[in-house]
Amino acid sequence: MGILEIQHLLEYGEGEMELKAGLYAVDPSELETLAEAANLSGWTVFELDGRGIVDRKSFFDVACATLPMDPPLQSDRSWDALSDSLWGGIDALPSRRIFIVWKESSSMSRSTGADYEIAKQILSDVATSLGSLDCTAGNPKEVCVVLA
Image 1 (cartoon, rainbow, N blue to C red):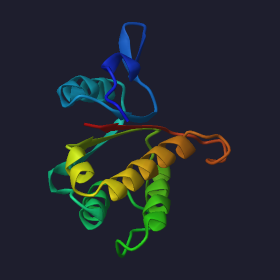
Image 2: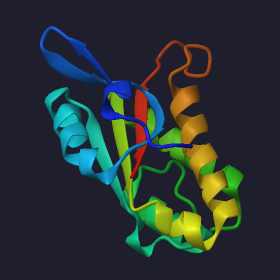
Image 3: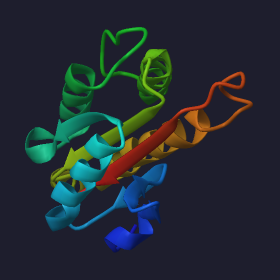
């Protein structure tokens, strides 16, 4: 996944910036603009601090401490359990718009590429499926995940 220019992530309407749902990699220098757009548009914001995420265990630890999980996870043994728990946690939120920032995601990418790809895929799948009318019984959410 290459780094996208900020204009690919934002829609402009009536003088305001609106985030698009999905998974994106952006230049870290763009995060302030994106966070401002999220806050101004009423998105619920979660931030994963990637400085300590270097492997599967540390990803699970930070994700479970930062993101809503339902049901709560008891271990880092199952990527599927993480995916299901994250989906349930975000689905249970009252907010319809969720913005997840994974700062310094490259730390995990450099140390364990395979696990990084799985983590990215889970975040992408959750964002996509929570936006589906079929998967959410007609109650979809907009989930925007940004890797920086």
